[in-house]
Image 1 (cartoon, helix red, strand yellow):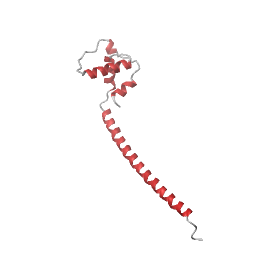
Image 2 (cartoon, one colour):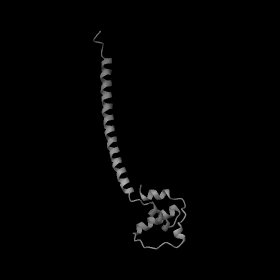
Image 3 (cartoon, one colour):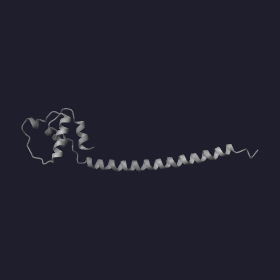
Image 4 (cartoon, helix red, strand yellow):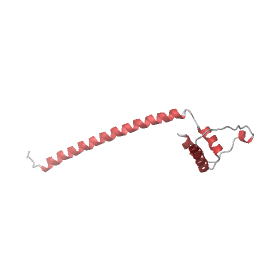
Length: 116
């Protein structure tokens, strides 16, 4: 799950940790492009939190092992797509066979009875 999806789940107000209130936090500088800053502002506003709170939530939500899970999901999706393609191909072939069979028996019914 992408971080932005995890952040959507965390829209409800979150109590600030005791560390924030007790002055145990530290400031740091993050370099970002203007586009990233605009995105940060929009996402923070949409979530109703400050930019700093959004970054804290993103840090809390980040799970490096999730990248492995995402890769596994992508691989599984690729297999599902291939399976769907193969299933559709088999259905097309089956429909063609049914059509040929109906034509065959339709022609037999339309022909005068030769065995009588």
